[in-house]
Length: 252
Image (tube, rainbow, N blue to C red; front, side):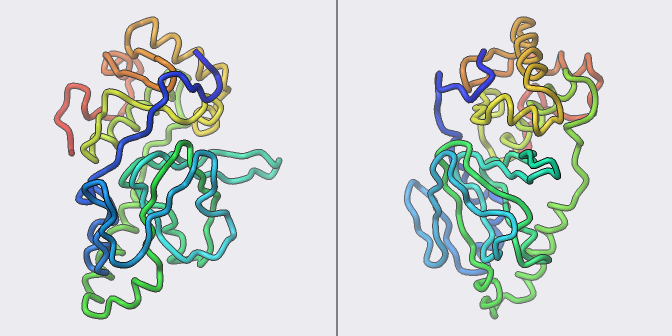
């Protein structure tokens, strides 16, 4: 098992269907026809291709657009007072970045690609131009902001086993919600980046993944993690998280 970002068995996180994307309603109301069927049919806006390691936007930069991950994985980070990079979140296909633009006018964090990624870009001025759907669009934006503000499970709480297990359960559930494979995960982030998100040490993340692998709870091969019996691990740690795709009905 590699502590860094392994290249073994590397592949890309698959694309999400427009109907399963959080920006779907806004794209419809603004006249955007998002990327579908292997080609772009957008009449306005743009698809942004972001190479692995490249930046989508930086903290403090003027916010001019919302972004939805179409394919790949994007991480958001902030700098600590000590000058260290702290991972805030990993954004999977169908999830939105840049919502702080509505209240701040600037981006609150750095966003960069963990793997070759495609993002749908919705220019903010376009939201003000959709005059024929002003009320519907306003309601759609409110719903999107409310969804983003909803309480989320703190992945940086509990024992090391709870944190790592909850991280896998959370990612699997989010992928399942989008209709993507929730049992074959692609961890394009490094062990160090996972440790930063979970507020623990890289050695702890690696050791816990190795332990879960030995117990046949998961099977790790490079960046690929197959979930075999994650319910066993969550039962043992009494985690409150559900795990769609692991013996429960998927929301996708």
